[in-house]
Figure 1 (cartoon, rainbow, N blue to C red):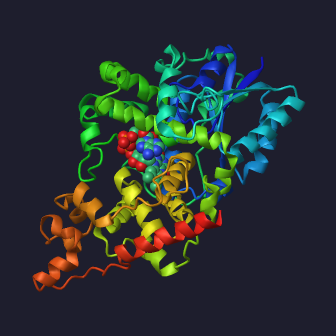
Figure 2 (cartoon, helix red, strand yellow):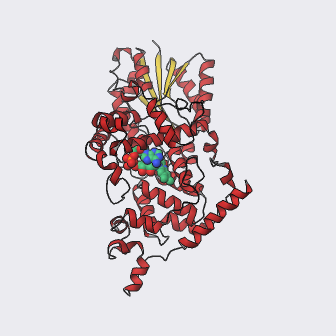
Length: 481
Ligand code: FAD
């Protein structure tokens, strides 16, 4: 009896997994594999904390799959070049006739899959791919003239109009496979699971869940108790007002469809009327889809290009000292420094602060958004190429539907508006803990007034001066175009 191969990639879940459900529905034995390419992880700047979460999740997933009588193999390979050979040899070893997986839309992953498809088809092995990363697959949300959207709001409208009943109906976990279908080889894998080893550096991710039950409970709790206030509170970093589900969505431990189904179940009216906190939250899920759709049709984004080609002429500065100050949270702008410490110490940063620090890097320090994009990938638990690139290009004014280059955040007024009592800043910068209220955002002014000496850096740049310089750099680039 032949076996089916289920290839896990960025879809580390057993619920709402179309590839898994299809493989099980074949009525044959299923072997699952995860190909771990540490060289690729390095090239993609995968954060050690995210690597740790992936490895913890794989151990959990192996248990979830074992309950379905599906053994999971984790194979460490050097890079993507080895993947097609590795899959072919598995197919020979286990008499595999069909391979199932989900689409990935990044350029390298698409190229890897082309090589796999070709190699498998030469051996008459079927290759079945499903769209599980997005609720609506890339290429399905188009303008009336069949173009891809470049602006979010009309994209959202068309995206919402394209939803079908299926979009709200995540799949459950499939039924267990009849154990009698497993041959000796598969039974042995099932009964003697290998230890999952990997030399990639790891940083403890145990503050993040890796079990389905906990993740789904987190989604339910957010939907039940926080979604209503999301619109009003989501920009306040001192409050725990967002879902903190991004790491799970980035690794496919949770599907976007599970999110839509839950929010719709609890807030059907708000979603239908397109108002209120739950709809604002759904809009964020749609931003995630927007950036994926953009990436799928603009492969140059995966090669590091700016979406707006004229912005390639912006003369970003090259200043190692300023870059280090930003990375280490020593810019002398408390909101920026507190946010950068939150990232370094937890692997996560609040969305409002991602916008503030990205704007600061590009418009105040005049450093390239690519430096920031890379640093984020190296440290984020939720590092996700499409959302990260989209967020950075939005903040740097190089992306589609980005912040216009002449609208520049003032980091101090952003801080006063979104952290009005300075609670967030004081939590991350103990050296400023004694400065009361909003004065913590202008610590040296307060310290001078009160004759206090501070162990905190002076601002590395003057915002008013740098703002003018940023405008000049963009205008010069525009004139060159
Ligand atoms: P919630 O506010 O609860 O939102 C729910 C979900 O919607 C998130 O989990 C996420 O999957 C999605 N989402 C929310 N905001 C956005 C957005 N602006 N763009 C795309 N998807 C969004 N998000 C990542 O998942 N990975 C990244 O690498 C990443 N890098 C970013 C870099 C910059 C410069 C900026 C400005 C934003 C970035 N974001 C990224 C988007 C956003 O900041 C995070 O998704 C969000 O802060 C995660 O917290 P949460 O799960 O509590 O989000």
